[in-house]
Image (cartoon, rainbow, N blue to C red; front, side):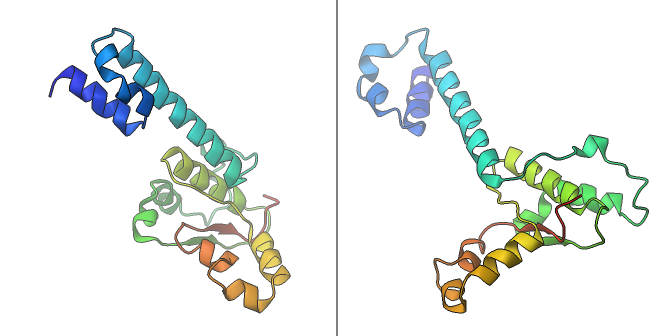
Length: 165
């Protein structure tokens, strides 16, 4: 495959239909490859920004600043395994359980952020927020296909019992 063919396929993948339609006029131009790269990078950047905004993760302490010496019962290897996002391949949910102030929300927010960076969509909710939303719905609405329960079926669920961490 020639360089021009690869660039044409790249333009098609980016759905730059106007460019593709006039390909014969611009094929071989020195600005074409950098322009396609810029377009792809800008789309990736905007996609990440949109997913970060929509995830509602909020401000959180990064794992690099996490105090692994407290709480003592925290399994660092298990947290690092969760940070690898391998649980998402099995569509497994994770729920952190523990008393207030031990870092459940911080862990969930970091895992959610890691998933966003990996290209996944995330919606961060504390357990109290989820329960409040479900309580606000009547049982008929919650069971409909367009209800909250159905919308979350296909995505990984990160939850914590308190958001005050």
